[in-house]
Image (cartoon, rainbow, N blue to C red):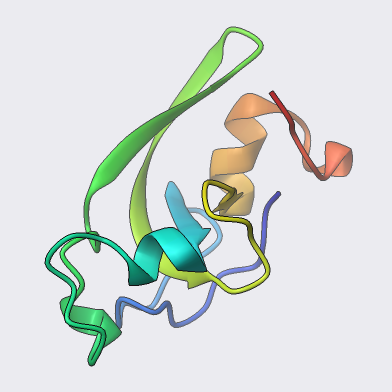
Length: 94
């Protein structure tokens, strides 16, 4: 899915034009080295990952935590999502 950007769990103000992503809350909260106290200090913040869908790929930076997501779900900025599919699609699976 995609979402409109704001102040992310990593303490960074995001904007819709950036290639950023929120990861599922369970993955964020359980990331190795995270103490669970201050999400700004989570070692996953600032890490990059590459998502691929139907032959298209986008590399995004983790800057947020998605409360409504399952463990391995990704919630993209509109610009990042648009690299993979039109935002009108809404949700990608696979």
